[in-house]
Length: 265
Image (cartoon, rainbow, N blue to C red; front, side):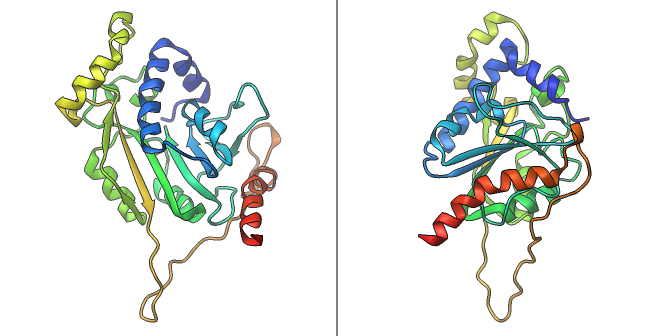
C-alpha cells in the first residue's frame, strides 16, 4: 500500500527522516553535481531532495500521484507541485532534462506505463535517477518508514526493469546503511555507518540508487521507429475539484517555454 502524503511529510520531519534525507541527497548530488540550465522533474515524493536543484536549474517541478496526495512545495514560494496520473504526465515530448524518482517505483501500480511516459518527456541526452528500497536491506522490513512500503528491489531486478523500458542503467549504488531506529546515539554515527557499509557491500544498504540514460535508436529502412504516445491530459477529476486537464495546461507551459526558446535560437 502506498504511503499517504501526510505520513511521508511526517517521516521527513522526524530526526530519522532528516538523517535519511541528508544521506540520500548527498548520493544524488554526487550523481548530478551540476544542473545549471537544465529542467528537473521529481516524481513520487521527491521534494525532500530537490531544494538544491530548484536553486540551480532552469526550472524545477515535482509531480505527485493522485493515489498519494499532494503538498505545497516549496514552503517559501509559489507552488511547484502538480497532481497527476502516472500514466499521463502533463508535459510535452522531450521537455525535461533530468527526472528523479523517489518513493515511486516501489509503490506504482503499473511501473511500465510510467517509465514509458518518462522516456517520452526526457530529452535525448536526458538522465533518470531512481531511488528504491533494497530488497535485502533492513529498511525494507520496517513499515514505520516509507522505505518499508511497496515492493523492494534487487540490483538485477532494477537493472532489468530499466533496460526493458529502453533506458541504459549505470552501476547500482548502495546507500542508507544506518539502522532505521530512532536511537539518537546511532543516528549521530550515521556517516560512520555509511563509510563502513560501503565496504560491507549492497546487502546491508537501505536503498539502491541508479542513474540511467535514455536509449535513442537510429531509424533505418529495415527498422521500425518506436511508437510514442502524444501528451494528453486525463480529464478525470482529482482532489479538490481540480482535473489533470487544468493542471497540464498550467504546468506544461513552464517547460515548453524553454523548448520554444531553443527552437527559435
